[in-house]
Image 1 (cartoon, helix red, strand yellow):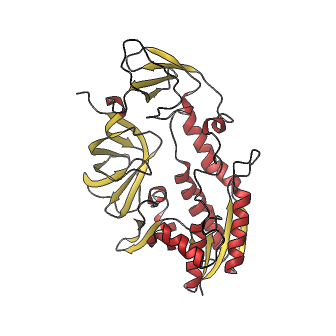
Image 2 (tube, rainbow, N blue to C red; image 1 turned 60 degrees about the vertical axis):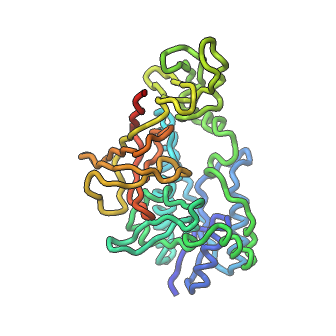
Image 3 (cartoon, one colour; image 1 turned 90 degrees about the vertical axis):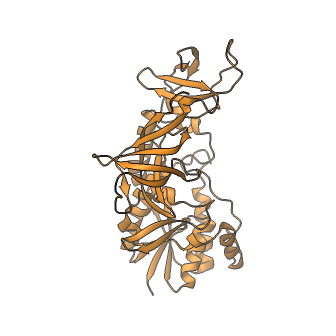
Length: 362
């Protein structure tokens, strides 16, 4: 039997991944990873998650290892997270966590435990293609997590197993129920552990001090004051505290831009205001999971996790970055987030969004 280390998170997805691999004849070990060790206000669920992982391991009669990667997480993920917010951008730490922790230090740790592969409960499929391992979307489109996996090295994906990628979520829960796994009806986790369910601004305020500045309309009218640009993201409506203004339409206000040099928040009225709509974007260096395609080439792109695929063209740039031109303009494209590129079912590449081009006014 080949040994596989399954990242047991305490949830139903990783539990069923372990169950399926055991049924296939692997020698299965569980690994519970702690990536955050501050729980002074009860929002982080790591302690309960470990107890759930222990219960699953006991039911499956498999060994369970426990390890803390908190130091690596702070250095490789959380430090970048704070730096991006200080710069007025909106990062996605889950992408870095996958690249640096789950498929980085955790994979190395699994190898030291004698494993030939690392398994996870991600909703994605790994397919052997002509160029090597390919990352494909999960069968359950509503749960597909390929967006968060685009930055993982193909060489690391080649040593990874994702057993539930061909299952719908309802099938996963039913398999867990039939097997008597105690987490079969456990609710899905939301967000990331170091934030949990706590108010996000409250959490961010622990690490980034308030830096008040003006709120202005796109034509320069003073509208109020903000506590810090870090607490806002493009397209945001809530928390602006701007009432009705004489001579202006009765439409809600949205964040359209952050002027870091003047520490000014720029807002506009109407969710389809031209300053919220982008016709193209430019990325940082592109991480390719496939052989780069000739320029320009048609593809589909996601600029946020829950978004449907958007038709676009990608033009590689000489410095390894890319320009992406949308067939239909997109709303609230946000620097610091990721543009992830697909060709049908296959995830080809991804990169950090650096700049966006606003749609021309009619």
